[in-house]
Length: 220
Image 1 (spheres, rainbow, N blue to C red):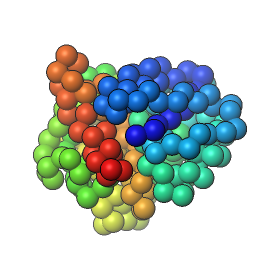
Image 2: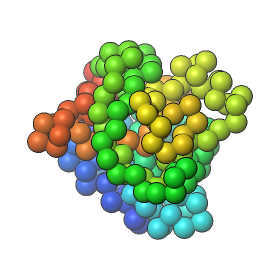
Image 3: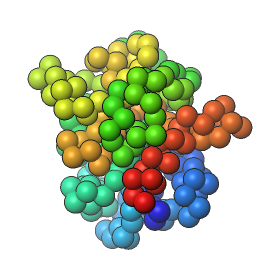
Image 4: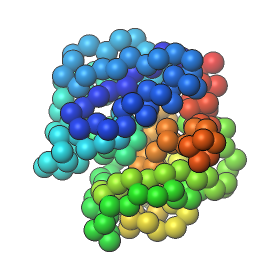
């Protein structure tokens, strides 16, 4: 599986993502700088976590206007599997690829710990390897992970099966405890937790590995 990791100034999980993809797929991803205009032909695109542009203005707002994002949005609209984790999720909402917004945590504190996630929908290319309704353990590390959308959007996300993951407990005030959503087509996933940090027992568990293996199995 050929993949690309988009790197922004302030990304701090790009190496984590690259290591995870290399170990799981057997191929090193192409690291693409945010001011590049060209994106190689790949099977999968990842937007990693971090604090792009220092989270100035709004988290992800400046990165959403980087040169490479025009091509990322185009590839995503063409059906290329695209994953945005933490800051990457924020960037995807700022581009309009995914609905809603990520606001400051309700308790106004940075949250960094392993959390339980319930798998809400296994009929996606990202979650097919999980059991529906199961609870998995994945780390979070964010200050602005409070997912917000109006009630009509929330109803549509749940009604369409676009909610991939929910927090087992309320950790940041996210509406309906939403931790990860897909686009309507199902080829784009944004999530606040970090599956790339939970891919082998030495890291504390391998629940995150299943997400990447699900993508590989779907792509064949």
